[in-house]
Length: 114
Length: 114
View (tube, rainbow over the protein chains, first blue to last red):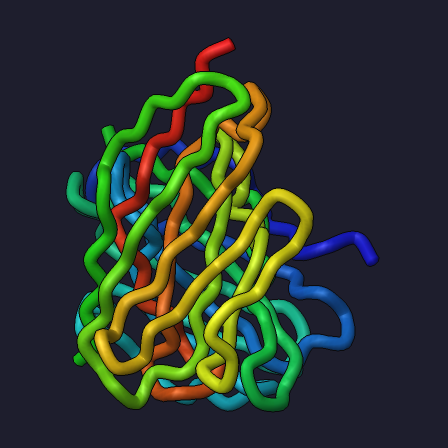
């Protein structure tokens, strides 16, 4: 069990550029979650999947954000036309199906918008 | 929607003393409450969780209590050590079961002074 892995660890880009992050969950986990964390705050929910189905999107997820999990394994989160306010740590977590299964987090991708 | 309040925002204790962090939640349907520890630059790590069918759970020096009537839960760390210094987050499941998105508190920065 290598845990949840995320790539890249850091991303610096200019405002207006598109960025894409990848998350590989724990191999037997069906559920995958994306959260965003800004300095001094707790993680905030963005969206989550059960296998390849996207079950819910937060109001925080504007039209510039899109997430996919095409084969029910890894997931990607894309941000188009990045803005200063998108600077944050993007965290991925995964869990098993079943009631009240714990979520395990990856190390995150830190996005900095210049 | 669910709202989680966490207090205090910072906490300093002498090594060997106990630390208590308290959280309240708003949605009476929530029934899963995890606690995460996050060290600087690292992923949130699950340290303990509690389900609504129990009032208390203990794991070595860490315990969590839950009062469903009052909608609050607390983390207790006994015999604190310098390595307990970190930011601690409480969370509650949005809709009951743990494998749905979590709502996090804003965190408590715990400093254990040797």
